[in-house]
Amino acid sequence: MAMDHHPEHPDITAEMWTSIDTIIDENNSVPGSLITVLRLCQDTVGYLPPLLLDYIAQGMALASSQVFGVATFYSLFSLEPKGRNIIKACTGTACYVKGIKEVMNHIGNKFGIAEGETMEDRRFTLEGVRCLGACGLAPVMVVNEDIHGNVDPKDVTGILDEYS
Image (cartoon, rainbow, N blue to C red; front, side, top):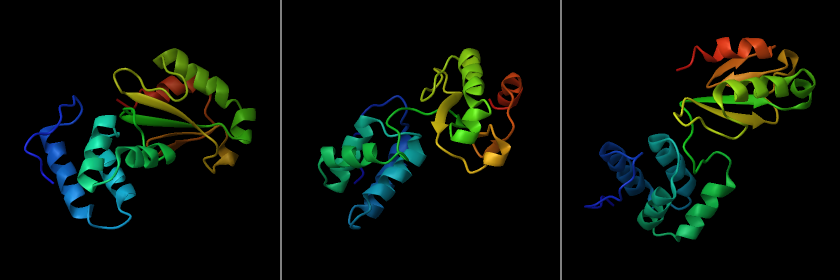
C-alpha cells in the first residue's frame, strides 16, 4: 500500500509506518486476515489509535466501522496506549479473599492509577483479570511475564521498583 504521505501521529514513527505498510501489503488479499493485521500493527505501535484503524481500513479495503468493531470487540486489542509494564492483578475469588484489593489500592496510591488505567509516563498499566490460574499462590499479580504470588501489599512497591 505504501502511501507517499502518512498521517501524523506522535506515537507512530516513520519506521513503524514502513512496517505497517508491509503488514497491510502482505495480508490485504488474504481473506479473514483483519485480526492478524490488527495484532501485528498493535505489536508494532503498542496500541491501535483510531487514526491507525482508519489507515488499516483503507489499506484492507474495508469500512472503518468494520475495523473499529473488530478492534473493540476483542480484549486483545487496545485503542489506548499501554504502559511499558503491564500489571495483571487477579480479582478471582481466591485472590479477592486473600486481599488483592488491598494490593491494587496500594498500587493505586503509590503510582496514581486505578484498575484499567495507565500512568502518564506509561511506566505501568494496571489491569484486573478474572483468574490467572494460580489460585494456590493467592493473591497473585503478573507483571509482564513474571508471576508474583502471595503478594503482601507492603511488598508491592519493592516488587514494582524492579520494573522501569
